[in-house]
Length: 268
Length: 75
Image 1 (tube, chains in turn blue, green):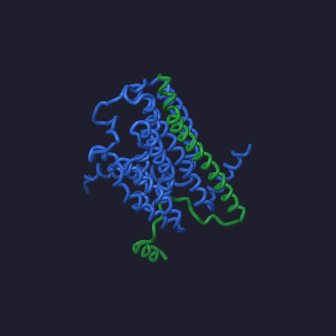
Image 2: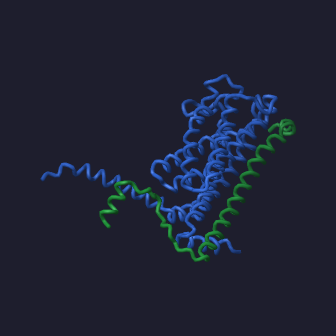
Image 3: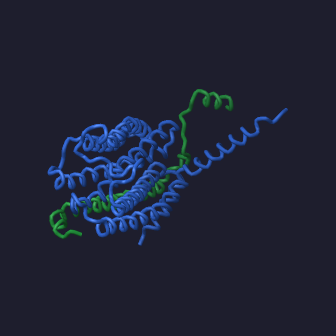
C-alpha cells in the first residue's frame, strides 16, 4: 500500500505533540511550580520597571505646554486603563477556554484575573477623576468613555459576586464565564468610544496605526509604567491562582507536599 | 520642572500615584495572607487524614454516552 499520507501524519503528530506539551504544563502541580518560580521574577520586574517609569515620568519628562504638571497623572492613569481592558480580554479568553474544554485551570485563571482587573479599572476611574478636576473643572461627566469604563468595573464586580454566590465551583466557573463572555462587547465600546461619539475625554494619544502625539520622553515613561503594571498584574494573578489551586486540590498528594514546602519556606 | 505647577497640582499628582501604590501594596499583602491561609487549610486537610481522592489532571469531562458505553463494554 502506498504511503501518501505521510506528510499529513507528520503534521498531525507535531500538532498532537504540541498540544500534549500545553496539557503537560497545564496540570495543576506543574502549573503551581511554574507560578511559584515566576512570581518573584514578575514582582522584581514590576519594581524595576515601575521605579524607572516614575523616574522618567516625574523627573525627566518635560512639563506639558497646555496642562502644566498635572498631566503627569497619565503615567498611572493610562497604564491602569490599558490594563483594565487587557485583563478583561484575558479573563474572557480564559473563561472561554474553560467553558469550551471544561478546563478547570483556565476557569481558575479567569477568576484569578478578575480582582486585579477590578483594581485597575478603579484606579483608571479614580486617577481620571483626579486629572479631570484641574483640567476639565469636574471630577466626573457621563461621557461615553467614562461611563463604559464604569460599566467595566461593574462587570468585574458582577463576575466576582456571581462566582462567590454559587457554592459548586464548576457551576460557578460556568455562570461567571458566561457573564465574562457577554461583557466582552464593552471592551471595543470603551476603546472606540472617543471616535464613535463626541466625548469630553480626549482621543487616543498612542495608537498602533499612527505616530504618537506626545514627546518621546513622555511616551517612554508611559510605556515603562505600562510594562510595570503588566508584570504586577501577572504576578498578582499567579499568586491568586496558586491559592485557588491549593484550596481546590488540598486533598491531592502534590498539594499536601506543596503546602508543607510553602509552610517551611515562610517560617522565619 | 515648574515649581508653581507642582504646588498647585501636587496634591492631585500625589493622590493619583499614592492611590496606585497603596492599592497595589494592599492587594499584594492580601494575596500573601490568602496564600498562607490556603497553605494552612491544605495542611489541616492532610492532618485530618482525608485520602487523596482528587487526581491532578486539567481536563475533567463529564461522562458522555459514548464513554459510558465504552466503560460498559470494558466491564
